[in-house]
Image (tube, rainbow, N blue to C red; front, side, top):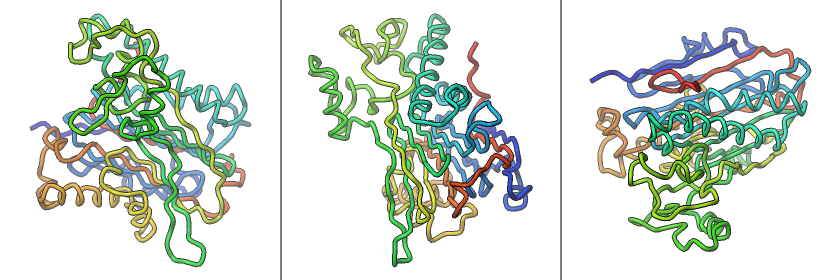
Length: 385
């Protein structure tokens, strides 16, 4: 059995505490333990962070990144921290492409507008979508299955005392806020999810496609858009956005029997803006593989009651314990199952925890050096040419 091929890249040292990541983690690039990649603790503009990803699929379809420092290409531009969690489906190509392109697009539009805003983030999503659809068009004749590959896309940007959360798909961002007069935390969900199993999402689809009685179909107790896919928003999935890709040589199982003129799925994210307060302690960004097994409050309680070092790994381990219990098996036995087969027990899971240290989210941070870290697996990022 070939061992998983992991890759990670880091630029910078995390800023305020030069070398801090190396001292705590022993490896600035993160570490690998079996099917898991992790970065136990590092420093970002607004505090500390922890990252981890566990592979379940034969090829890892989750990708993620953390960028801290300049958020535009201008020296005088905004500074802060960017987190991206990209949960691919149908293959790893789209999530890898997003991991290589989205932040560059955000910096470009932030430079043009000279600020971070909901509009800038939305433009970055849509530009990344158009770029990937161009790749699909280029490769359609010799790799048609790329038209059926897509990715959920969750982004968080902490800048000037605000946190922007943009989501297309069913990954999730949760804020941990200290309870007044208590020792615990309250979990506050900051993202809106786009999954056909949510009634409001089905209502939205029906309103957008009033003449299509089969826009959502229930199969095996699961609602799916056109009976094919659970998420209603994504980047990629060209076969459900442009009719030119919903035909042979695409596999018959992805092809719709009736032509469509309007896109069935949307790349447009739902965006929320939250003003941070002194009670806001941390943010959890994770793919749906985590939330399938842990509630918002359970995850927040684990972060609040545990040491920061290795907290992302600890959340994944807690989710895997639950996954094992659901199948009436021990966690130690689950760990022995190889990738690919492991997908029958749990999904790829990505977790990024951002700690928000008091005062750091509102002060000027232009003096802090750049940090760029990406976690992923398989071959290098998907080529655009």
